[in-house]
Image (cartoon, rainbow, N blue to C red; front, top):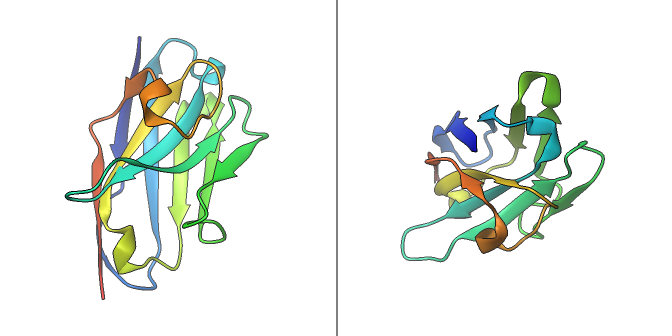
Length: 123
């Protein structure tokens, strides 16, 4: 089992930055690829970004490419999501998830999920 807990969400204005954190515990964190997803009210869960277990490889959704940056600190069992130039359409609950194989863009392939953290961007 891997437990993940997100933090860092909040209410910001358009153009602001925010950094989310995802703290993991349980089995060896460094063995898992990690992903960030988001879900806005009335919409399906959407892939945001994924990172390989080592951190050497990342994959971003086109909607956030160039604005968001994912990183991980395996020694701290933590994944970060730095979000710059936030837009109102980034408003959603952001979820962190662990994948035993690779940083898939398909949410249903992830094994472990956090409870989510709300990000609200006002215009």
